[in-house]
Image 1 (cartoon, rainbow, N blue to C red):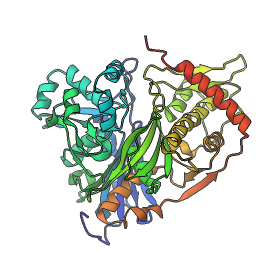
Image 2: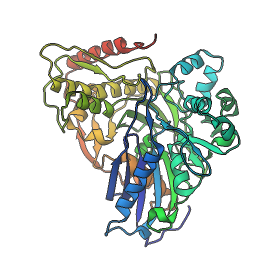
Image 3: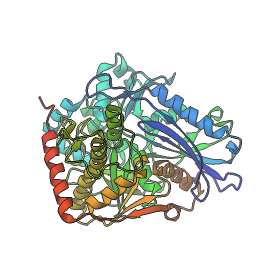
Image 4: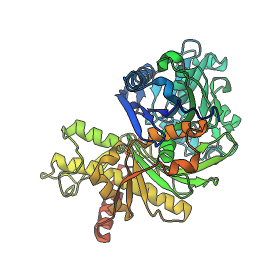
Amino acid sequence: MTQSRDPERTIIGAIDLGTTGVRFALYDRDALCLASAHREIPIETPRPGWVEQDPAGMLEATLAVLDDVLSRDAMHPERLAAIGIANQRETVIAWNRETGRALHPAIVWQDQRTAERCCALRQGDLAETIVSRTGLSIDPYFSATKMEWLLRHVPGLRERASDGDALLGTVDAWLLWQLTRTYATDDTNASRTLLFDVDRRRWDEELLALFEIPRACLPEVRPSLSAFGTVQPELVSGAEVQVTGVLGDQQASLLGQGLTEPGEAQVTWGTGAFFLMNTGKARVRSTSGLVSTIAYTTTDASTCYALEGSVFVAGAAIQWVREMVGQPIGAHAVVDSSDGVVFVPALTGLGAPHWDPHARGLLIGLTRGTRREHLVRAALEAIAYQTHDVVRAMERDVGERVTALHVGGGVARNDFLCQFQSDILGVPVIRPQDSETTARGAAFAAGITTGFWGGLRAVRTLARNDRRFEPTMSSGVRDRLLDDWRCAVERAKGWDAS
């Protein structure tokens, strides 16, 4: 514990720095959200397959939401017990140690510029070693080839990184540096880099050598639920507040749902869709296209693992359709079916369980009668289909059926999607009262560390459900829809392989 319970410190803060926006929220001892603020963060696509963001814009938006919440009359910063951070994972930033200024736009997790490098690695002698030690697939999604690209293409970066004058890390490390001047990351974020031995919980020297990444430019790795540093007082209205929890956003969402027991599973529907199953102390090695990852670690050296299926485009597919057709998407689908239209949203390749960076988006089944409402429904259905695929893959890996699916993220507010997901999987779908499970998980991490909450078991009672959706679709209809989906996915694969 970093500090004893203080009756005056009655709230926990959480920063959720995601892909399309950042949120700062405050929670009381009952894990009820007292106040929150959100700012969008722009995404740039300077070339086909490239996805970038401005790190300075990330920081500016983060400081803005902190100020927005803490400057409200009813909020008193001195009540803050601690702050937790959750962040978009795999995204890479290089910055100057002395000035803190970014040396290149952030390369976002969706970026595919290193697809050819990954193809070569999959054919190489160390392919099995990479997968075995890291638990990950060799894919542009993960951080190592992004770091490698920056070191090769940003003038002078390799020399400065070797000397430790330039730093290279994921978004959590960047934000921690800006807030606290601590250069650290946590085990969950390190486990997403393709550079981290998830069994030994340390940077792997052989992998660092393979990608030619100097150890001097990488952060110290700390337990997820531990002290990371004190926030500069001027950034939190003069209060003295520590960051006492850091988690990758999907791991935070798992904790935010209170799913701390092995076998419990949830999907977060945000920009992408990320399905995680808690596997406890056992690291499960997937044979079905999923990845092993660290769910959280604590200062007593205990590690909780998870199996994960990562879908690159989920909520982003809805956004794309809305931009293309100008159709607002409300809480319910507006037509009874997609009229045969199937949308494979491989806009940045396909993630789990297919792992095809050369796949491209596909709309099929269009007729003269197709309306924009059909496209909207097809986009929503695509989220459920992709979630179905990773759930079935996970069931093959663990040898057990998923009996219920917890859902979170902003897209989970859509009643149609929750019902359709239940129908396609044939199991109940459970939605929490607070769909911002990632922010709540960051708060839980910080609060458990400080003793604000009693521990991991205590937060299980703080997660409250809103609604349970039961399957109503016949097996015949389900099978027909899934057959159409599988056919469409196969057509989308390998499109950009030439």
